[in-house]
Image 1 (cartoon, rainbow, N blue to C red):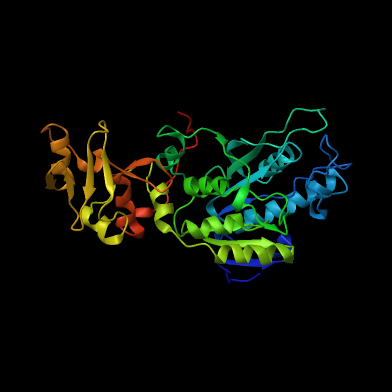
Image 2: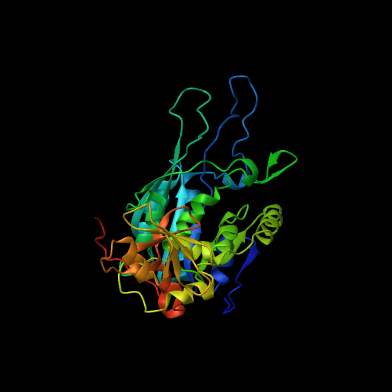
Length: 374
């Protein structure tokens, strides 16, 4: 065991051994995409007899359920040890393994918060026609204990559901096209996850600057998204060929903290710290020329000026003055009424950005009560 925390790096080796060497209570979130134990017994072919490029890797093969359960209990125990008191974990799996993983999570003392169904818009068909097409995978989100004050950005999550409360069914395509890592036309990794999936996980359940650990890093999706969103990360990967490609992938990522901040700035409760609007412009959370949209009327669009004011319909003034103009002369709070377009594609109140502009004190972790259904 060591007190050294190797941030923003990939550790090569067995995750169970490496987890045992990391400092206790040192990471904020774990995202794990473990072997699924698919139990494949024969080649899978299409109707035209071409071979399907499926998961046939040795790392996904176990002799028995007992062996798989022992492996699962060992790595989950290691993750629980390195998680901070208020940390949380996401584990993704399929019907082959997720029920066994869920039971072991509960046996170890984790507190399940949600199971999320990732619905694939482009799933692989069942070529033999003997079962339903497997069109989804399941993610389990769990806090370290039932008393953990886990991070959850309720308002920011709404960006992914047109401003409404985010549901536990997420429709996201499989990783394809240019995002899919290939060498000579072949997949680098058989189970590469889409970045859109990881962006959603990290946006709703971590703060900028927090530490994310992936004990099965594979092609490096978690690390790449964490770097882009301004999170610190640690990856563990046993296969050296995957490490090579993951390192190249992460090195090519341009950090974009504003994207992570813009998607996750909002908090579910509390009063935002008082900061001048011009500070948002000075710090780069908004830029001169950006457009703001007046809540309740798509006709009113204002442009941000370099000195922290707004211009709209021939008027120039503070966010409150221009909001009053757009409201027909009625006094109103510009922080609450003006919306900016986040890099995630939705509209969010500029009020959310005050947490970021205020510095570390404004981005403190929030907790949700155990009974959180609405």
